[in-house]
Length: 221
Image (cartoon, rainbow, N blue to C red; front, side):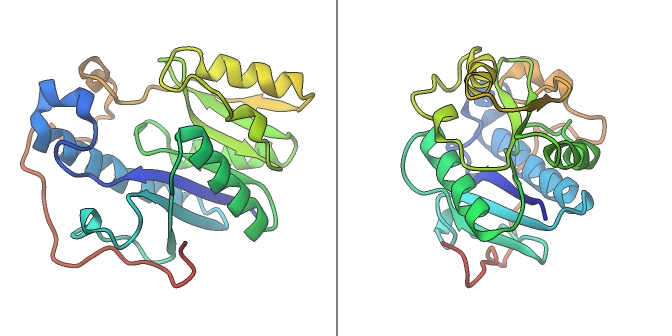
């Protein structure tokens, strides 16, 4: 049973994809973030994994999520406090404790990450201790673990070109079997927009809004 955890930030103008604001404006950057969130959820559900969890910042129920709706079957939890490593480690440990089987964790910044990548990562994680899909800027868009591994998240220089390499080094030092998938591109800066899949429309449009709030699960935390 493989669980997929998706880290997502509320697509609020001025608060998300800020490095794209010079190119797209605050509304355009937020609209692209919303489109990438929707796309990630579509691919996650199409992958046919056993469980999908959306781990949110800010927490479910915050007004920043008003107007964002989710497909049925997606459980919402809170990322909580701490740096990225603390939040990722906490989310993975929680999911590993709740589910029988390994856990994959992804973000929403890589629309090139499709359902086939997710299925292959889940398949490889059956035979490896960890899986990782790197991105061209030196980070990674997916990590998967069979068991908790706090050492790969502690004192990491996040948002630097050394993240993936350092993570792989730490995994190797622990003697873990690691599968590394193909390199992809995430969308963080203006130059990255060239890597948007053809199905994405020009993100320079007014962010859409909806009337119904995000749905949360009684088991959310």
